[in-house]
Image 1 (tube, helix red, strand yellow):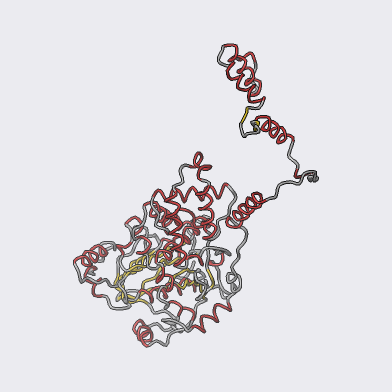
Image 2 (cartoon, rainbow, N blue to C red):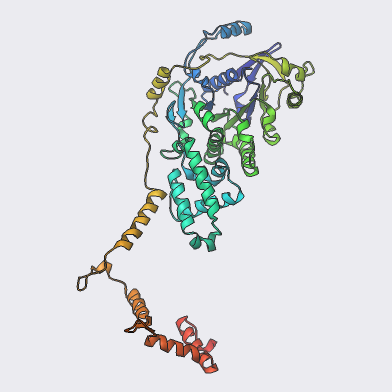
Length: 514
């Protein structure tokens, strides 16, 4: 059994997070500047030391300190003495840096097909009609064998479907030109925000997130998200949601393990649930409810627990609540609501304590060995053993280049996909349209000669061609004249029987069924 993680110290007892209960998910909440980042570091170190890989996003640039030994910070030294930690020493954790832009870590990519129409529709702010068109485009691409890897593939496929809307209308429904135009404009806007660097190959291999180092410590994967948050918060939230959904869909069921297979920290969680569509919210609720059986613990990090929908909040068993502000009536209601989410402690006025907590203090309620939430305690968070704060560009570069993954994700791959295939198809049509007429008497290669069936159809077509007189007049051919006579004959009963007999013979009917 894995050793419990020492999280905080109250006046009465030490508070431990049990690894066996870590996949029951959790919440870390609190106003800006109350100590959430330190709590994140302490938790990540604890999981890593027990061989559990971690994924977390660094939205402010200060979680990178996990890669360096700490302990020299005066506030850390003071907290160590206050809690009486005798075996405390600075220690770095094994870290891998990732970055959508490929500047502060290994490039992280996904293909358009992997993202899927549901999440991509959310990313593009599409309405119901536009989402319907996008779903149609994905379906046509799948059935046509067209790979959608990057944004240029999707744009080319959108254009192809729009140009051939009449061919797809019967099977798939209407393709609105206005909807296609709106999607194309939103794709262009998404590209200007840098999302084009996210879509492509090599796509992220989830196995690369679930690694341990030579000492058996879980690797802490840190997504450098500072630039991404500034340019496009929605891309950030949708990327994390996609990653979570990929873990949910690909990892096998393992029940309740002794420790998680991976712990996933979803920072700035309010961005995920802000103006969330019902279909996406249902997907999140389903994942949070079921992903624990796949050995994944999900910890939402937000300023206020009310940022999380009640259905999701009810699934988060381990809680660390830092101070909340109560300057306005709305803030006061939020404090009251947050206080009611804890299992009450008769010795503690939770609502009052929420506004009085100092930096590095929190209200903590963790699951016991039976999965029951313990009564809430006011406690001081254990300081991290790694460095608190940012690292230098030289330190980051050295970690990136020494990683076993270096070189694999750095080189983008652009293999044949929808864009190239559609360009090739358009090129063939252009060549066929510009081909010179055949030279009389020239030999024709066997493979270029028309089939017997095509020759018969060509002969029948030429027989129906009208005759052009010397002054440009058009006269029916003999075959056309005979056909018109047959049509007139069909007006009589004998004629109708004759025509039915001819059609019956062509369609395989028997005279006995007339």
